[in-house]
Length: 233
Image (cartoon, rainbow, N blue to C red; front, side, top):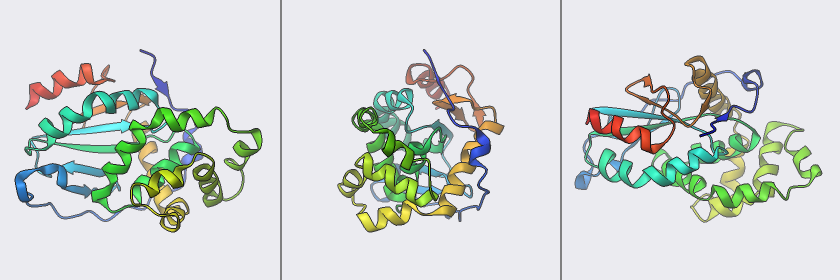
């Protein structure tokens, strides 16, 4: 399997770091399904599941990585219905920003209330083939807009050209709110910091996984991850 390496220099992500506010540990949700509980870590990452879960899975993923989309399709049902729902496991998503499109999507998924993050996150992953196909039709002029001007203008151009506004509108994020997300410089800094922190930890391809903080060498798909989770449950 050919893994997707980071496509942009980490120096280009040197935007600084402003920690997000951590949320207090949640009590067991009504109905007992921990998929309803999403918390935000001090680093701004989203975690679904029991904050005191026995096993914590961390996913280092990129929205423009096809292997990440394949992992999402193969793993989602088992991870949410078996791993998270009963409270034994939790899932944290850490962003690896490989290109401007990655950043635009991460801004859109991270600016909604925490409980909505995984809805948008999974939708972008599952529809990746459709919006990636639009990349093949972009003109040179459109692509120049993505790399010139202030960050907010670049992100809004990407969202417009790739029809992200229509996509997130169907998921409850309107145009005005989406524009605020795409222009949020502090949020962009926190997302960029996740990529820098991942590189410092030795992550250089996506997807990469960690269990309870330990990165799993040679594990990059559901087939190799599943038995390692099962052994710890």
